Length: 506
Image (tube, rainbow, N blue to C red; front, side, top):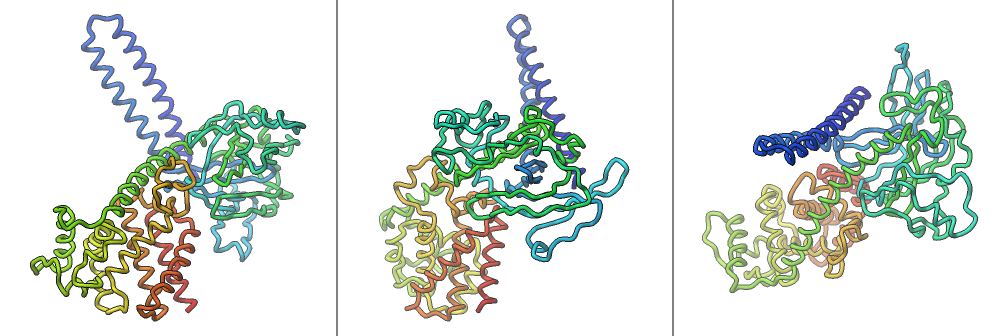
């Protein structure tokens, strides 16, 4: 694992140098273009050089999105930050020992682990990683690096404001944070800003004691706080140790400030400014991808909202085509009938299915089409059981529930992409799924439908109990949302876990 990260980091360093070299070549050729007569040759060469530059930049971006790890210090604690290809940030408390450490029983199943490294004499060094928290890149509000940390406590409001304005603040996510109100208390910056004893920033050379695990709060909002541990081990940078001297001084070390969407902040100290810049660039790449996914999903949600607001129109040929498509999916061997008892067999309340689309408009129909076309075996298995709920009407109610849990309305859709609406738990889940599929909303709809069917059978419900089923289903959806799923597969796994857990309880 360590060699993989090392090779990846070396490759990124090589690509950066090649990109710089390529840019210089382009500048030289561009200068020639202004001073030489053979412009056609120079223009062709410029085109080729730019193609090579774009290829290098693309490879660098892909490497950054595959993830990396950074050994840092947070106060007196040694913290390992890992970013994976799914843009998930994992924070570990890190200690080292010359002997194999024991993992407490209460930490065995929470993601804690032991990694073996070797020193220059090929002696094993055991690295104990105790899981502190896991967060999605969507929870990150801003990132800054290489700012100044004051060595004294400002005594008045204006000094506090001045020291909340970072010298080299960079925010690839949303904006720089010079407003003191971004912190929890308007008149006081975060406590982690004031590091009064610089000598405590150097890692302590104690490999025979694994130290105490820091107290760390882990919640769905991404807020975290660390308390000091009495003994700390050596700190590593990437795949190599910082060395016996540790982090010699704040001026030579790199600093990174993470501000979460809860407006809480954390400062981490890295070996060098180059290291902190590398972490900033890597987070920036993940954030850029997150922004694109959010923008893509926001456009889809707006389109779905428009479909939802569009009533079914018998005189609209496109609407009639959609209804015909649903019939063809259900009964491919039978000619289309606009009114038929077979519609009731599928779970509509009458022989005219269009009456049931009044609540959700065209979107209710489109979701049913997607469900039957892409998950027909599951649909057939449910219909075969003759549940005591009308299947099609339940599907239309699921569509309504989706908009309810996502808080989609006319006002929310006018909010900019960085607003709390687009960073709600369910919207983050939807954006995470959209990395792997272009039908994130429809697939979340399918997972919710499966959950409804599970709750129905578990409660042995009747048609009159439908409101109670929906209430219980919302509770289970909230359980899913708190599990911090970070990809399409993780979302499906979380739904299965919640269903399995509820089966055990009952």
